[in-house]
Length: 288
Length: 319
Image 1 (cartoon, one colour):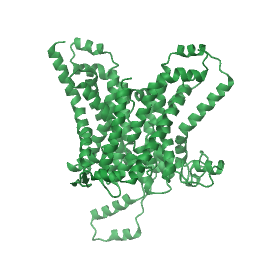
Image 2 (cartoon, helix red, strand yellow; image 1 turned 90 degrees about the vertical axis):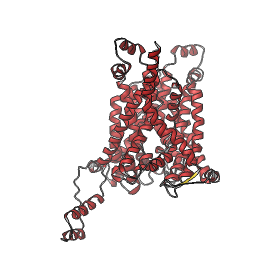
Image 3 (cartoon, one colour; image 1 turned 135 degrees about the horizontal axis):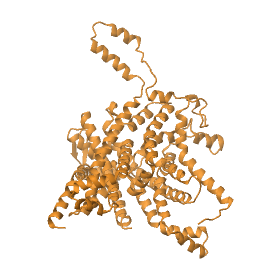
Image 4 (tube, one colour; image 1 turned 90 degrees about the horizontal axis):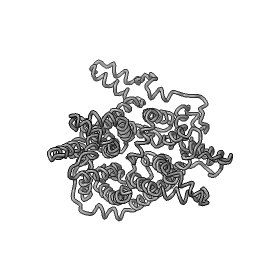
């Protein structure tokens, strides 16, 4: 290619990228910086600000509810990551077996993932409703495991488990999809060789399947950590009393005693965690 | 590998698949069931309504004609000749709007228009950006690529305060037009990175020789994009639009921040959450609204299941 064409191509490259990139700079990169700036101010809803230095961060460090929120976030992340990965793996193995109508089942399993959050959260609310819900009916009347009906979602300590189960239900399909794709690419002769070597079905799983899946499982885990650290709708709409970090920020920024500078400071802390995870993802996953 | 499986294996497999389907589909069945039940039937654990009741759907779709009765005192007041025709109309209007009707159609239209605009703008911008990143060579390309990857993973909650303050700062948050423009721009930027990412991966799978052949035939690169790349990518473009549409259709966070005071412009998530938290004992309406919100996504999904599923693995998927 001549120099003239090379120059032309690169000019076109910039021109095609420019509109999208401009929007990203203006509405993501600049706001990230602006957020850092705001975290050093006392910020009112109407835009008035007063410089307060690091006092938002000092307030944060001495705030009990912040530590409580960190703990809630950790439980939420651990529960959802383990649940989604294990269930996704189990379902991928199950639906890799051959049986009639397998393709239909594979399609149906994806439904929770693609259903809008807003159209399923209230169904889950109803299942756990203290008066009408099937959960209380089964636990109290059918199985007798609980002596009386409980408002499971009303209590933050039990609501977090409902939130975790809901999240696993909603997101195991994407783990399933990623794992199944990899599972199908493992050559059959590896299993035959392992069978000849005398490995049982379990041995073949441990020695052939798992090592092949190592990278895709790592990807699933990292992506779940990243998305779930960001997650707002699924938690807030199902159980607004479960205060993971995003919900904690939302409450400080827009409800009750509004303190947007403080909310900005919490967002900075969350961004630091997130950046660490993204860095890991770029270093480990994108190289795989 | 044709292996004869034992009966025990078959039974176990059948039970496992049944349990999986029960877990996956039960909430949907529950929603459908409750949406069709009379209030007296809600506590009944059976999923089959004793009497099928379509009232909730009829009400949401505006099929029942509920005439709003004006209270006697208001009627008397309206007969006062001192009140002008406009004032009279305004008073009647006020009473009708205060009636206990949930304008589902209006909220659906709001959400549909906003989501459709987001999907169109975002996919258009992303097509050019993704093509540029996937095919053209220029200085700094990998930095741009990595930046897209990074912003792809920054959640909206981290941008909530600064974006709100920016909208206030330039005076967009004070009126409804500015608010809608801000919200649309935010939805576009929330969907743009995933759209660029998915389309970029797809463009890389199209053989370069196709465009090169077209360019030897005298097409410019821009013409090659429109005559070769875009027609070849139609299924992927639709998948990307579907993703952007669903992300916007679902969005609650920014809608609640920006639209809270503009009731007429609420989107479905915001309207349903408000309905749910403001009134008690309306399970049938909430569930019917849930079913109706689910329906468009369900239809799109049934029509394009194959593409959508493969799009999911290709994009790693923004959520």
